[in-house]
Length: 368
Image (tube, rainbow, N blue to C red):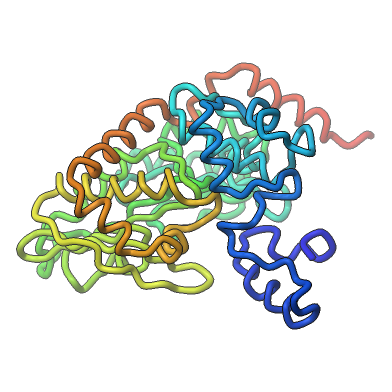
């Protein structure tokens, strides 16, 4: 069905419906299994858990090495298994496994979101949704210089420049001189904030500063799927913390943490996780959960689906009930992030990549 209709071959949100159609049509002959038992793709009989286990136990460090060791039936893999293998490798062996650009989707290779007309969307990062006049002037100058068709404020409290040609991307990033927003990747997206007690008469905590601190600490984090955080200064929840992967709500005595929220196709409210007193506690507990998710979730599995698969009690047992393991998870995330950086700066500094953009531009010129 994926091959002939493309259904369930992209975001996966309709996979359950496709499975129901199969079962209603062909009954017991339908090859319908939970994702934990399904093969990673048609290139292998191994499921996601078995692949991760092999990478960890046998210290596999490259996509080619992993495919060879696990006897992949297709020598170069496919668009389903290559991104998954690449993520499993770099998340299991940070600093050792080398990221394979050819195993990433076009959005991640280009460090921008491809649009329906082939142009790209560029979203500079605004930590915690906070900006200043200098950044806004640069954004306006870029919009004028490159004749950007649409400048859009996003739901993640940032500004999106839509309709940029691929060959213009390096120059746009250089002119913006702002951090990569990672709006394109399976990664940390945004940390949404309200204005907090610094300005709001209802705010009980400094949500803006905590949001900025969390987003800067998580900058560059890749994950099985996109991850969004939000920090609200009071239970009025203006930052929509209840539908984020990690939602943080300020109360008079500290902070409440919620996990597994999702504002996507099927809205999921986050589950109450723990109440903590300090900003340091917020980081330790939420980062430990995120690292557990990074280490155990299947590729393209959102936090809510990971939580539903393993159970909230299991996550609480590890993160809340085992202080030593919680600190180890936190430390492993920080270690992994120490190897990450600003994707846009890497692209600008890499002359080979800039030359590739120029080549693409020449190849797309129509003959006279």
